[in-house]
Figure 1 (cartoon, rainbow, N blue to C red):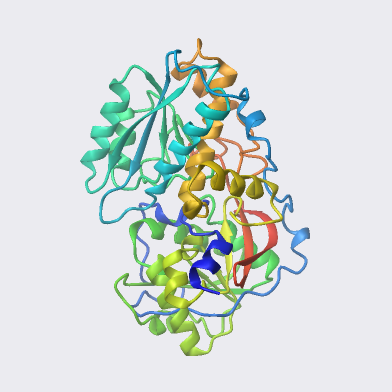
Figure 2 (cartoon, helix red, strand yellow):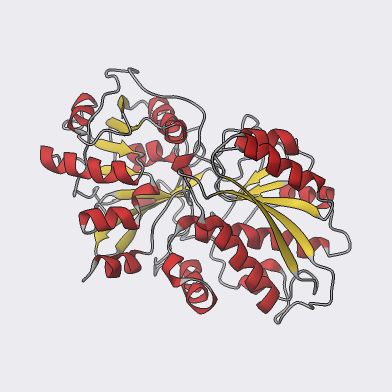
Length: 447
């Protein structure tokens, strides 16, 4: 079987969430000594899988997913095409793409696919077609201000969808200044977290990383953890959330970050006590996944590995012949998971009207499904009553299920993170050759 075949079966390249997806946000720098060890440079990876979830059903909600299989019913649409003679309903869209550090350029493709599906198969919004007006950041913070001004000054736009925006996040949020609701899939920008008129339907890097500690403690019964990650602004925040959760649960923590340009990660793993820890928790970028795997393999470590989902990447699979046989946490459904009815529906839709090659790209998936929720709100409001206020009212009242996401969500649950709507993560053991097995149910961060 070729690598491409394996990956088509796996259907699971990420970012945030999702799922995303989540490891790319942040503002906190997190390197150096915390408990026992300080950050160091190196490189590594392992082919060992984590142990089975065991009595996982007792420690987490085992609901497979949101369970949404009827997309037409979910959005409150009517089968058939929208009336092209009707005035379009305009939705703003901002994403980071076109620069050297693209996080999720496919989020835009997912949002466009959602609009295509709605206009061609779900009757638009009360018969009106939907139009997406886009703006992109790529290399500078100032671009967020430009996009914010474009969104605010366009009187046709009453709601702004946001993809994977890290560069420009602060200026975007500051410029919009809560004048219009902003709907995120997975929130990854440092400016998002305090937005009181922002709604991160799949959560952010903090809210969906804390559950890694819960899984380690409650499912794997770990007492000690080695937490390792590349020293990158976005990844630091999610890693700090894992560290904080582990400490709250009374786990013995050793944490080490590595220089993102390092290729030999034996040093960081040794400093973090990976050889003796009960579990290794990591949050690497795709390059770091490959290096980490190699280092763990070189050291002969058989410690279970929990990973954020950025390793679910076609580049990683190509470099290693398959993705590492680790356990992955994802704040959403998983494309290609045959046990999840939502994933089955998505796979069929992506093949019929989307891009099958991107069907497993998490930002493509998240961009599509976050838009479905916006469509649901707009249909409930009706085309004649759409405004910033009515959309915000729908968002604040929304309790789920979030299609492709968690069965229940609650926007505004955390006063310190008012934009966060989800704090749950689901875990999967990867057994190789495209086979993922759910383990541990939905886990939440320690209180």
